[in-house]
Image 1 (cartoon, helix red, strand yellow):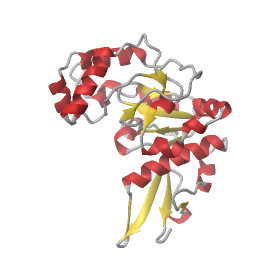
Image 2 (cartoon, helix red, strand yellow):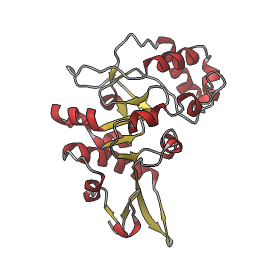
Image 3 (cartoon, one colour):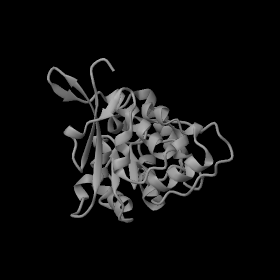
Image 4 (cartoon, helix red, strand yellow):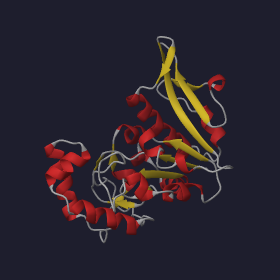
Length: 249
């Protein structure tokens, strides 16, 4: 089983020393994208990345300094965000990290599909931004590469990413592929809704649950409980696992 999740917008070098980064699989594509982004001014990045002048200037500096000859830092330990706080990879043992390296992927608009220990450098890029490469948006640029990297092993794949990142995979599914999407819902005024903040925390918590318990089948994820969310078999099927937070939990 493989599980994939979204990256975080923020990142910084990890506190841990002595964990050598591995090499990302899509370095030629990373170099092409980085060169395109390096050619843009800070104000162009502000518009394309839909961000503030301060963050655009920071992104500009990062791309000017971007060099894939630098090994970078392990992705799982470098991202900072709600999902990664809940995942808490800094508490992982060597065996936990080794298991994650085999069973977890982080989708990135810049790096493609990352293994947890693949080295990354500071950057800012999302699939929905306005950057175009050879006239293509980022979904078209990556095509079915990320899909193939996930499904080439012929094992079930679990989607723990946001819709923006899942869109880089789902349109390419073929008959026989098994993709299970996990949803985290709350009942509000008679209908179920997703609270983005809590959903991010649950996704990170589920990755932690998967790695710590060495899970290898999607069905085992049904035992996950976090932030008051529990699996609801009556709302789920083979392709969609729904976890619901009941009132008062």
